[in-house]
Structure formats: C-alpha cells, structure tokens
Picture 1 (cartoon, rainbow, N blue to C red):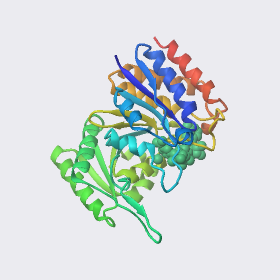
Picture 2 (picture 1 turned 90 degrees about the vertical axis):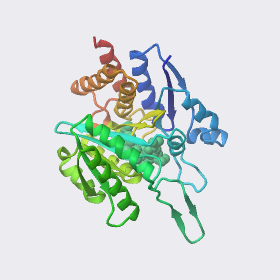
Picture 3 (picture 1 turned 180 degrees about the vertical axis):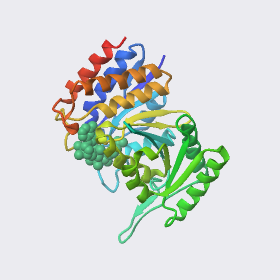
Length: 322
Ligand code: NAI
Ligand code: MG
C-alpha cells in the first residue's frame, strides 16, 4: 500500500497542507496517510523539534508532503528541514517556476554548500564552512541534465566562480558533465543570473546551482508567477522524496485563513507525478487553473478568497473532473 507522510509543520503549514492533503485523499482514498509532527511548535511543547523516531517514520513513507517549519534564528536551534533533507539524503531540490512564455526548473543542490551545517560562533568571529564535494556536484548536475533531457535540453550553471574557489570547482565539474552528456549549456554568475531570469525568463530551461544560491534565486524567481504562494518544490534523493512549497511558515499571516494553498497543492501534484500518477498531477494543476479562471483568488494574488474557500473550490473542480 502506498504510504504518504503528512507533515504540516508550523504556521501556515497548518492551513495549506490540509487543503493539499484533501486533494490527495479525493484522488487516492486508497493510500495510507499518516501525520508526523515536527517543527518549532513541537519544540515548544516537548523541547525537541524532530526526534529520531520522526525521521524513522518519514523513511517508511513512499513520499512526504511537507508544509513548512519555523526556524528561529537561535544559536542552539537546529533547522528541522535541513536535518530531514540530510537524513533522507534529499540531494536534489527541484523548483519549477512557470507561466505563459516561460518554464524554468531550478535544480538546487540540497545537502551541502553553505548549508553544510559545519559552523561555529565564537566570541569575535563566526564561520560557516561552504562544502562543495565532487560526489555532491556530480549527482546534482547529473540530475539537472536528466531533467533537461525531459524538457528543452538546455542547462544553465549558476555560480560565483569569480570569487569563490569552491564555485570554480562546482562550475568545472558541471561543465565537464554537460559536455559528456552532450547537453547544450551556458554558465552565468549568480547575481547577474538573478536579474536576467526576471528580465528574460523565456531564455531559461534548467538552472543548476549550489544550495544557498538556489534558495535565493527560487524565492526571487517566484516574483515571475505571483509570489511565494504559488511555487512548489520536490526534494528528491535516491531512496526518499519530500514535496513542499518553496515558502516558509509565514508567521505574519499564519492563523488568518489568508495563505495561498496553490504552492502546497502543486507540491501534492509533484508528489503524485513522482509516484507514477501523472494524470492525477495534471488534474490538480487543471483544477487550480479552473478556479483561478473563475476569479476565485487569494489575497496575495489580488483576490479576497480565504485559504479554505479557495481550497474547497479546487476540491470541487477536482470532483467535477471526469
Ligand atoms: P516565508 O516564505 O514564510 O514568507 C515570506 C513572505 O511571503 C511573507 O510575507 C509571507 O506572508 C508570504 N507568503 C509565504 N507563503 C505564502 C502563501 N502561501 N500565501 C501568501 N503569502 C505567503 O519566509 P520568511 O518570512 O522568511 O520565513 C518565515 C519562517 O519560515 C522562518 O522561521 C523560516 O526559517 C521558515 N522557512 C521555512 C522553510 C521550510 O520549512 N522549508 C522555507 C523558508 C522559510
Ligand atoms: Mg527559501
């Protein structure tokens, strides 16, 4: 039986994930859905944001649907998302940003780089070690090349090799792999790439980059499609897979029933495509399209519908599909 772990997490995770969960239940009542409670709320209650048993539970799932967790900028608090991505070795973070006239897939290295977790704060100096390994780079660029092969066959390598030796290393390995695979490629400095994606989104197909650059560039690129409420992501490893909106727990709007559930719904669609139900994935996407065209929009994209109102409209559209 297909097992799906449902992690709401914190903040608007409690609002957008139930919508996406309902959509999955509607399409696949036969799946086994089970909740896993991790995050800052859990830490406040128990002193532990994510236990070993939670990681073990996530590993029993065929796929994880994840909301977002709050990570307070405290010295001794370990990020739950980073822990899960590392524990499940979810090395490829795929972030599609698409609309009329452009279809970009950002492929972000997800386990090392600036988020290696090797860091310390001293009295007068703090350091974070940026780790770029050959294995880590080869596997992420190969994943990006596979994606390009299923798309328009164009790879852009985003880096800062003019300043960072670790990115000379990253860029050179990416170029060698691209040449090996015979894929069309170019490379760009990440800061210039950030602007160019906004100015010429149609020029891009697959963009591969290191961890923090991919994090930033995907939030920035979400501007092209109406903001963070719309962009989903997949975190894929060789054994496990987790699907989550690009956005975080949005404490500024949490509990107000105004969060946009589209990113969560699209993450659920990516989950279905990953476990082999491409048709279900397309049904979710087309239901979202139907609701948007009918003028039901959440506040972040110019409407006044609440999270649940939008969600119910999507569920209704899904139910009406043949
Ligand atoms: P955020 O993505 O939560 O919010 C940024 C802005 O976008 C806010 O103004 C928010 O209201 C808006 N927004 C986000 N999602 C939205 C939605 N679905 N509908 C409408 N508006 C939406 O990022 P922020 O504020 O930097 O971080 C908040 C917390 O989330 C932090 O504790 C951070 O560490 C955590 N975070 C967690 C992530 C994860 O679990 N994967 C990813 C990013 C941040
Ligand atoms: Mg981010």
